[in-house]
Length: 239
Image (cartoon, rainbow, N blue to C red; front, top):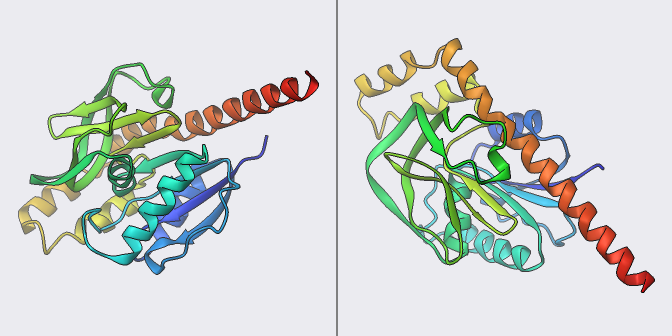
């Protein structure tokens, strides 16, 4: 089954997001530049993906408020979601959780643990390597949400029904990781940046590729639930 997914691109320069998510997601992606207040005029999608961004969800910017409002409405219309980094935080905030600034910036290849209870990380080792870059975190989960991944910096994944989100960046390739790291000169010391760049190696990237499995897991989940819904609707129509 071919999937139609709305890619809600929250990067102010969206080329890297566009390339990375189009490479990883086996679906027909319809892209919206949400920083320019572009949003779908329909909820007729199999799923939506909210990407990373340099913004914070608690900033008083019109495009963030518009995006959060649309996301809430889409979730009420039973659209499945995958959020990454900023998208993870926005989904948490939209569903009633809390996001706050961190005392320390998490950036670079790091280890995250998951509980083995979410279909999003089926086939991924309980401890796995990912690239991270964020200075905000989800400090309170939305009501009814279940955390499934974490490390010493906090929540790295939660689920609320058909909404899945991760703090880390499974979509990053080494080019993106390097470019993003170099772009943190106004937030991090030169030594810290060089340390992170030194860690962007072929071995670390290969290890982090394990987490890319979550994209196929997500699309498989959406196809499965869509089929189950169609089957149930057909059975009800025959009654």
